[in-house]
Image (cartoon, rainbow, N blue to C red; front, side, top):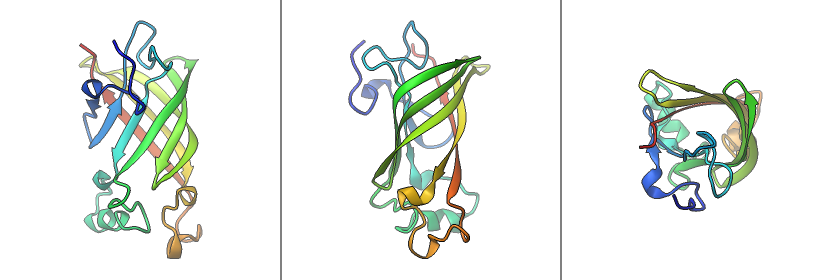
Length: 163
């Protein structure tokens, strides 16, 4: 097994999320499902921002505009992990850099890792970001009394077994 590239995984090992349109870069080895031989971690992911489902076509079109996600210039959000802390009971704290709209900030994503009936690993968690730190909803929307600055990001990744 070779070392991953700078994005966190060999192209042939990238897995599609079972639901949604994002990419997950992960590797498995004897030490556990979230570890990587070369860098110690492998819990990196990308989200295609134009694929966000808000259950409203008008809202989805609005979030693609430059004032929000600017998907024409920044089509993906990336999380690149730098460390994973096992906190016990199938729970982990994944630290790394979250990049949105060309801005990278430190983030810690608490993840619970379980198995589904098909034998897939399921990683789920939630963390809070400050949208204005990433220039999301700036200009007329910058007032946190109009749109809250703190936004909860929920993550659910279904990772098929490595064969």
